[in-house]
Length: 299
Ligand code: ATP
Image 1 (cartoon, helix red, strand yellow):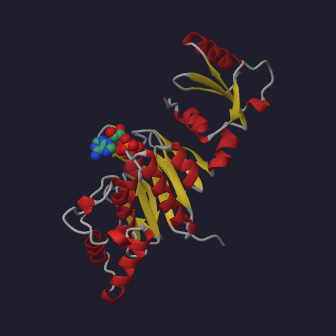
Image 2 (spheres, rainbow, N blue to C red; image 1 turned 30 degrees about the horizontal axis):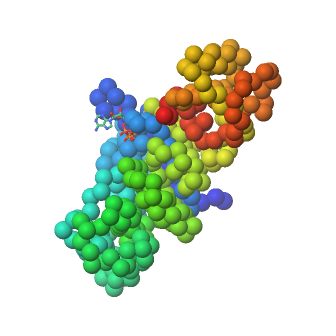
Image 3 (spheres, rainbow, N blue to C red; image 1 turned 180 degrees about the vertical axis):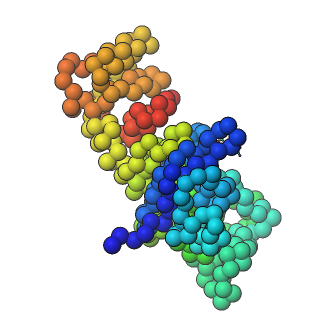
C-alpha cells in the first residue's frame, strides 16, 4: 500500500473579507517527494503555506499534515515540520551557530543530541567555516542557506519552503537549488512555493499550478508539458501587428497559442494540420503550460 501523503488538502477555502485567497484547493504531497506549488502573484501560495502552519485557519475543507488534522492537531504537526519563511528572520546579533542552537531549543532537540544536530545543519548548508560569524556578516546566499539549515535541526519529516529564492541573484539561486536538490536526494519531503518556472521544473518531482486560489493542473513537469503543450512549438517573432495576426489566425483554427512580450508561440505543433506560420521551432516547456493555464504573460 502506498504511504499516506505527508500533506493532503481537500477543497480548502480561505477567505479574507470579500477576497477568496484559497478557493477549494486540492493538493497532495506524497512522502519522500518534492512538490512545487507554482503560481503567479496573488494565486494563493503564501496563504496555502500559512494554512499548513496554522498561522491561518481554513474556512472550509479538510487539511491533513503528517497524519494530523488541522487546525485541531496543528501543534503536533508543527513539531515534525520545518518551515523556511519567505522573509529572512534570522537573529542578526547572533552567530550562525547560535541561531541554530536557539532552534534546537525551540524544537526540543534532546540536550545530548544538540551538538550533533548543529554540526549536521552546518555541514548541510556548507557553513562550517562560518560558524562563529555573526549573521550580519554573511552574504545573502549564506543567509538563505542558514535559513534552510535552521529549519532542519530537528530532522523534520516535512519541509515547507515559501519562495526560497525570491529576489536573489542567479548565482545565489543556483547555490540554493544545489542545496534543495541535495535534500531531495536524501528523500526529504518538501513543499516549495515559487513563481519561478525554472525552479519548479528543475527541483520538483511534481508541480501543482495554482491560479486564483485553485489547482489548475498537477503532475510531474514533463507530463504537464506533454499533456498541455505537446512536444513542439513554433515561436513567431515580429512587429505587434504580425503577432496579433498570428494569434487571431491560431484562435480561428483552434490552435493552442501563447503570447510573450515579443512573440507568439503555437503549441503542440506536431499534432496540428495546416500551414504553420514561419517561426523558430523549439521544444515545448513548462512556461508554455503556465502561460496557457494561468493566462499570465512572461516578459
Ligand atoms: P505572492 O507570490 O505575491 O505572495 P501568493 O500566490 O502567495 O502571491 P497570497 O499572498 O496567498 O498569494 O494572496 C492571495 C490573495 O489573498 C491576494 O489577493 C491577497 O491580496 C489576499 N490576501 C492574502 N493575505 C491576506 C490578508 N491577510 N488579508 C487580506 N487579503 C489577503
